[in-house]
Image (cartoon, rainbow, N blue to C red; front, side, top):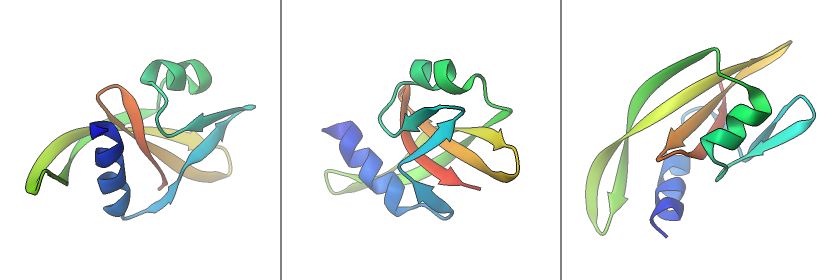
Length: 94
């Protein structure tokens, strides 16, 4: 329940175009997948960076740390995959 709530909040704060999934070769990466599944499908990202997101939980605002993994795609815009607690919580086009 908590991860679903945080996911909904993170999606609402998206500045870039969001997606629910993206393709790595012939495989599809989706929100709610583990980082292990992401690495297995796409390999390691070209870069990682951390950011803070403000979320509301039980009526209180708090900031959480999110790891953003950047995947380059030939001839297309980069995909940024946001990770929280070992799970993909947001996918966006850079």
